[in-house]
Length: 176
Image (tube, rainbow, N blue to C red; front, side):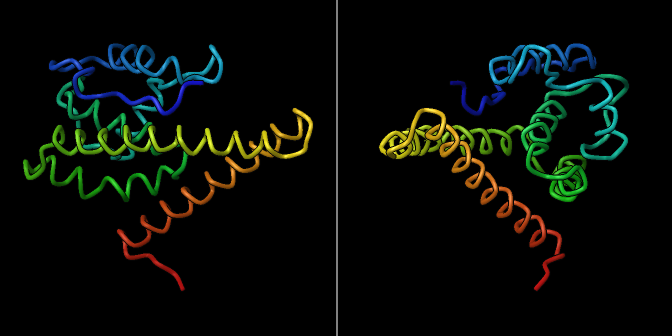
């Protein structure tokens, strides 16, 4: 089973890329994580919507810098748990600092991928424990699989709600 695939800085060309090259890079790097062969990792429409929505700072001409690609990779990872509006809020300060030269996006992204890689390793351990717990239950194979799915989706909800709470704290929109 393929777990959380990451696009590392060393996987990103050190030159600016056109949109088709960006899409190809993402397709190649994230292909093992696709649920089905027909799934699209990233499309021109998605990237154009991210640009129009100001989820990353403006590109120069029609080329995307390595920093843009790193930000698009962050957006790709966040979009499965957060709304586009929340992602925009989260990345607003990062984009402002990056555009003003106050933040080295590559260094920030390296820190992110280190955390993500550590998360992947922790998840493998957690998943193995979940599988063992489900296997120990006196259930048939289908029931064990449903139990595992329910447990993993509940865990996913915990992470999603925690991320949303952090978005609210970051943007000062906490309730209650």
